[in-house]
Amino acid sequence: MVSNLRDSLADRFLSGSPSDSVEWAIAEGLTPYETAVAFMEARVQAVADGEARELVWLVEHPPLYTAGTSAQASDLVDPERFPVHQTGRGGQYTYHGPGQRVAYVMLDLKRRDPDLRRYVAALEAWLIRTLDAFNIRGERREDRVGVWVRRPDKGETAEDKIAAIGIRVRRWATYHGISLNVEPDLSHFSGIVPCGVTQHGVTSLVDLGIPVTMPEVDAVMRKAFEEIFGPTERVEAPLLPGN
Image (cartoon, rainbow, N blue to C red):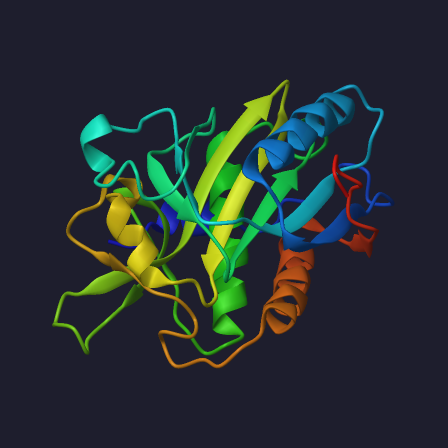
């Protein structure tokens, strides 16, 4: 069942300082997960202290699994397949890897609206608008977070997950964020029960027959983000240890 409440919550999630734009950075290559988390921890502290601007950081990771705060040990089907990272974000097990666009979203909710339900609804709306640009109908579900697509080719009630959401908040500054399956190896999801959901599968833009590149997806994501969260400014990707 689609949540009308979450639809209404997600209208606009603008900053109380309309002159401020969100920094928008895209990392090249594959970013190690531990490095990404260390950077986010420091940046979120600075955002919360008013010492850094808000940031959306787009990355790809090498193949790995992450365990959220609600992860069940039984959902880690193949613990030896890829590295497993414990993380403080909400949610259960998920997969990250090449061909999946991960967006780490570091916003100051004090300047927007300190309402976590509304923030998650805004992230869902961002993903749904992105998919709509590729003529894919992404949908919310009342009983599970993320964005889903119906798969009538697999059965009358079949649907697959195309995007995941997992957030963490510190002093009303957000981090972690969303992941959108562009062209990952979908077989890599078989090492876990993604987000604890056994009744449905996973899909991607390319799996749905949309031959799209990551830069094309990034451009659409940026436009859709600005429609909900406000203007962005392209900046250089963070300089990380080892770069």
